[in-house]
Image (cartoon, rainbow, N blue to C red; front, side, top):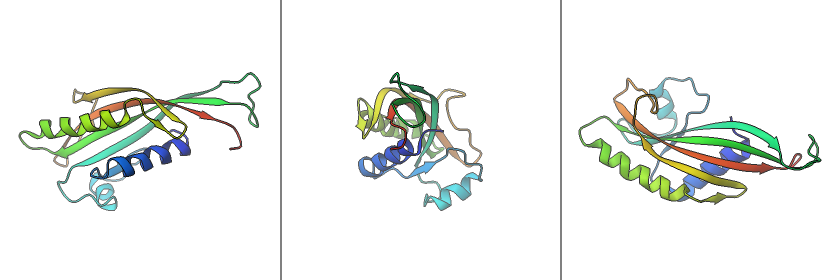
Length: 152
């Protein structure tokens, strides 16, 4: 799971720059889908955006890095799951939403978070969320790095 600063920064960025998306943080959530959506204010059958954060590693960047000093770099990814009600023609709507998100994050700097790469919408098997609740999804992967100074 990514650092708290990364999670808060990305969620605030989405709230400011993608206000039409209802964001549901799925990281380490094990509730029933309908319960999570209700708590997040998603109306039944409305489109929403799921997000999951994954940190790959944190490595020292400065020679003198310890738990108290120096500089560490977190490398990670967050996945944006573009979700919509399953219906004929929904793919075009999902693709439009995904393109907007790609344009939003491509080359962005969010405070100390630097977006390194984005991957276009993937709707292939194993790349999406799997639902029994009448939704379909496609996933946009966003890789980042975040420099962290211990104690700050």
